[in-house]
Length: 138
Image 1 (cartoon, rainbow, N blue to C red):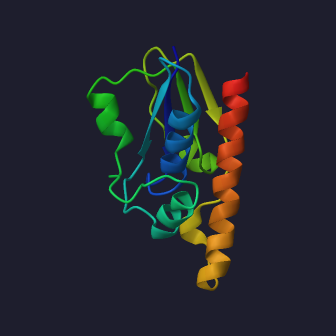
Image 2: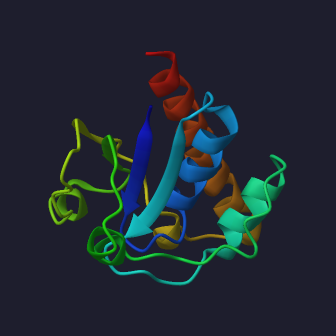
């Protein structure tokens, strides 16, 4: 049974997308959650990009990794979907069999016109979907 925790900076973009894709493609008795080091506000570009793939993240709340830890959540894998500096800040969860890092650009840093930002967010979204599919195929 896989219990995955996706960790990113603010749980506003990458972790939310990874959690949604994992839970869509996961086998029975496999699930994922996501959380951030410092939870922020859900990224509206991510909400739009995920809606294009049939996911409604509009009501999702950001979560704090430390709260999950304090509440005693258990995971078999912790996958950071952020830069290396943030990944190093992740707490150690008891019972975690494996830690992984997927280096992905932070959508909150994207600049340009609305469409240019959406194109960048779509690229990250599609990368996350491929990472999740590859992970589950292993």
